[in-house]
Length: 131
Image (tube, rainbow, N blue to C red):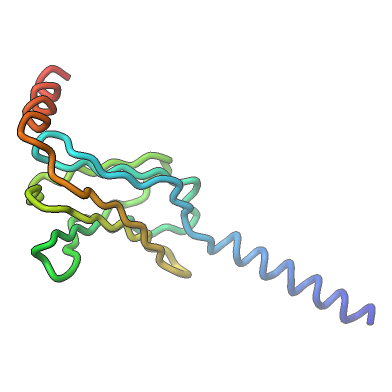
């Protein structure tokens, strides 16, 4: 019985070590917002021990599936941004963030339900000029 306990303890420690070693990034936030005629994607991570890439995808109502926009390499920072310069903003747009890592990939989604009005787009463009 004493041997079994030690064996279970060692197995538990090995599993915990593997989980820590091969854990993926924890995405704490994933947002999308209109910036003029473009869409800015932002996400925050709590850690990225074995992340290979952050893949970004976009889907509109007119598309049957997600289209890959970019692959962002992890840099060890906690906050990432990507500017989508060319979405069709006349319809709802869904964005997907896929965290690529060794043991498993995780996916997160952010949806912009409606397009901004012309006044909102113009005001956002004016603010960008004076930044």
